Image (cartoon, rainbow, N blue to C red):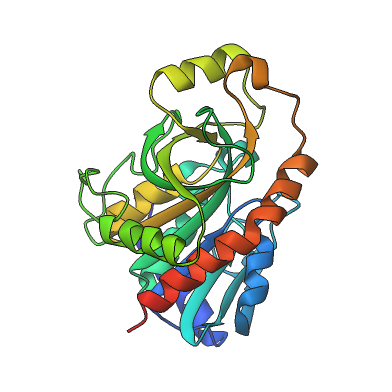
Length: 276
């Protein structure tokens, strides 16, 4: 896989030399959700641009740093900002950080994102626990020669979204009196938003949410044997057609910021519950 294993080891060595460390759990923060990083007692911070072979985020709302610290006493690594296919990266490049997390002994990743809803029951600001996905990207991050040190040639995707973690998230939501839906996330190339006809189509084929991230990372995490839990914040309603309005990135970020306290409650609970 183009010497990805060796590149991962180089990145890991640099991170450890910069006082980064290994731990069990990690968080990937998406658009408009970077303030969750403020809940972390940060012990070390490393800019993506300084890490060998790491991509650098071009999205304004993404911090672009790898954080090491504690969340309610639990050791945690945070990818404060992710990468997208529409930024021009290959699938292997944008999922490289997931490989590095695996090398740092991470075996649970919590991912967040914002999404449009093609399920009329999911209103802006809703939190949705992803139970499955539909991948429409034209490139797969596992395409090409497979290095068995990274994972199997044909990883099974049946249990991609870890059932035990989802059950834990639902329990925490109930205890915290938070409404938490479940749904199917469909991932697109972007960066343009979709047409009304496309929204209708995605609703018809079984999607609840649509977005431009997450699925490539999830595929690589599954390949690497990492357990995954994904929580999406609905930023805008895309179905029925009559409910669609023009949407700006500023509006998306504003909705994400409003929902962030609820998301923080869920992730803090999950991290604490999985702490050794």
